[in-house]
Structures are given as structure tokens and as C-alpha cells.
Image (cartoon, rainbow, N blue to C red; front, side, top):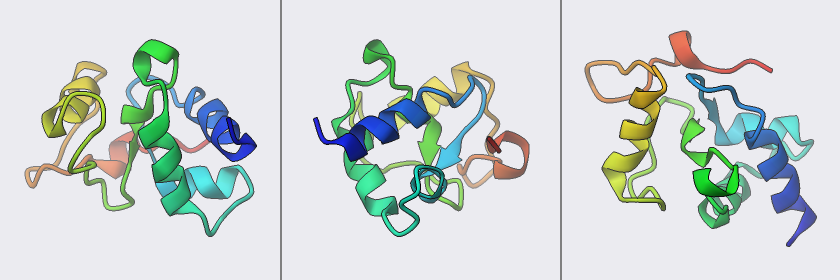
Length: 103
């Protein structure tokens, strides 16, 4: 596995339950500020929650969710987040002010 992916997975494992972060924030935190899209590729290839990588906690910067969430379809990400206590705005985006993880 590419070390970039390993760094992404290591950081995503640190996101606490009930919190989210963005693809761009993950990229910045691993020292690759211009690679948010690559973070998305890594998250899509992750072993998922069963593999210890809570990739459902990574969202777009406006709080929107991945349209084709890799682990169970588009509604699975929202369900996982709601089960952890993440709150959503009326338009379906995560309430980033309330739930964004600031490491």
C-alpha cells in the first residue's frame, strides 16, 4: 500500500466518534495540502469501518456527503454519522460548526 494512503488511514483513525473532517483538512494535516482529491481516492479504497478506518467521518468542506459512499450506498454514510450523534442542517449537509474535528 502506498505510504500516502497509510498516512491518510492513520489520520482518519484519529477522528473521534461524533466528529467529521474534510478531505482538504486531512490533506493539510498529513503535509499534502494540494491533494484533497487523492485523500478521496484513499478513503474510497480504505478497508472501511470494519478495517478500523472510519472513512464515513470524512466529508466535503461544505458538509455535504459523498454521493456514492463506497460502503453501502449514498444513505449509509449519513446513517453511520447520525448513529454517532453527528447533526445535520435542514438541507442535508453536516452541521460543520457543531461537528467539525479540529485536531
